[in-house]
Image 1 (cartoon, helix red, strand yellow):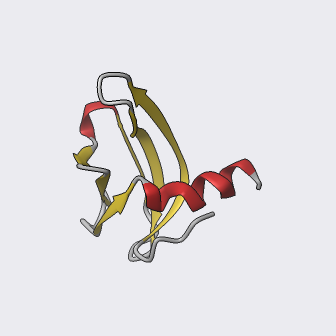
Image 2 (cartoon, one colour):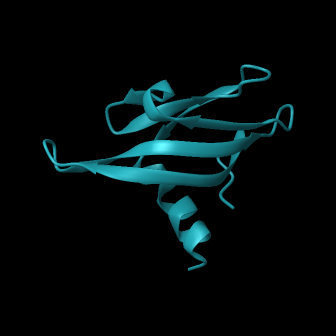
Length: 81
């Protein structure tokens, strides 16, 4: 799985937004490297940025901004490519 530094991405799903013709993360599950907690964020709880999102560990507050493009290696890992 993809290691982003503070987090290991375990899974995520993206959805296409037709109005802007772009994809955004709809849900993400990641393991925090600081405390080991597995956090899942989905639906309206994701803090979206232009072109990405912020993930926060629900246990220790560790956080990181991730770009949608930066998740491409994780998508390849999850597909087994």
